[in-house]
Image (cartoon, rainbow, N blue to C red; front, side):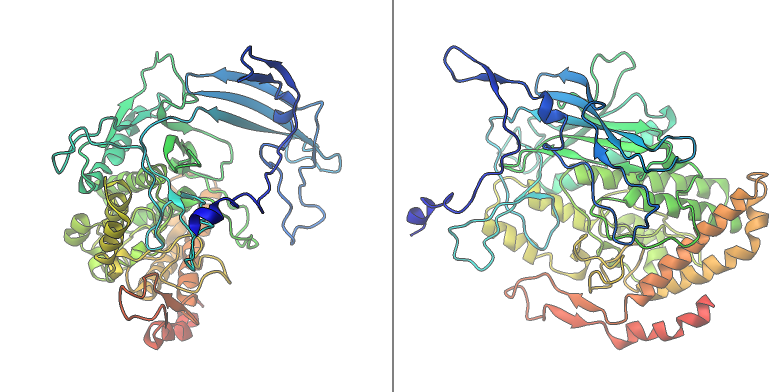
Length: 545
């Protein structure tokens, strides 16, 4: 039956025509032809650049306008051995826009870089994703399947092959090589290198020794990050960046193979600048991008204020800085390895063990570096423990083992995940989290929280934050003669109070979600949050006001 129905695979599926271009010239054998793609590049046909404004936007809200074809231009054409890149400046015009500071906002330029990549011909073996573990994937639906869930999405992963298949652990034929670009501050390079290499411990569980290598780009290198053969960790300083770091990658949509990746780190992450212009800003619709480094930046600034208020010594403050940068790099590298977010990983330890360095340095502060958990600042009356993760967690190791272990059948993969169905391997990503009101139902899957008792942890963070406010002036006056430092400090502390209150409020009406299969256990897929957990919400006003 499947063989017959396959003949109709394109019967009710139409192709999307991006553009229609004239063929300028054919090769002699007619197998190749030449087209002029200038008009394609100067339009929004390849990718939609503009987005509709939010419904709540006022008439005075900035609107980018429409593309100006006579002002837009192709700035660069760059040819590399395995990819060709085009840098295009799109100019959008809206004559009704008002000036923004010293910028004429009637005409705005957006630079886009397109990469056309040569797909490799190799023996890469795709792997189908599983609902219990989180990877970026390429959408694939089996239209001849009779299964109620005919999805066979292919996870994104690198092409790793053992050099020796006869031994349990082997070096790869071609390791994943990252280059730390020469734009990176010299004193940060050792921390970044060690954080990247920390992922090798997870790959050893998948049978690979030294799966990842790191090198420093020489100052006289004759290549740049545009060449897809080089995976780079780059550093930049933008005036008002929305991210402190991000880790995109290129993939083959037919197989899920990752072909190249780059990590961009922003200097703003290490500064005292913050991006909020108001004490209370309007809520925006939930965004589908990684804002981890932005949240980490807020947490780091709070950690700095708290550590100075609590008179932590220079060694402790240096450890905070180092561990926080470690976790940022671990997170962004995780994305380039194929992993998406896991906002349930902060449930690993209870509220006592989370502050015990003997436990956390051994087992990890959380189950995954792909979470957005808070910076672990000790509450009042407790000794400071580990600030942030410095190695992949238990869930991360399981994810790498699932994706990269060679030769695992579909049955093997299901057995692997069934053996790791305990709470410490809980998974939930952006589609499940409760960071925005009205989104998600499982309060364990959240951002900014910490410990298996997030309510108690948030309560302690509320008390700590409120204790810092009366002494902000004394704490910060030596840092700057400007009142801006105190004003920003207040906003940073207020953000922690806001986040903690959100975490507590999400317990009310919450429902725990079990992603397992019926064959895994007899546990119900949905379970109401226990009354004991959410009853604390009734007393939150006593702490807040």
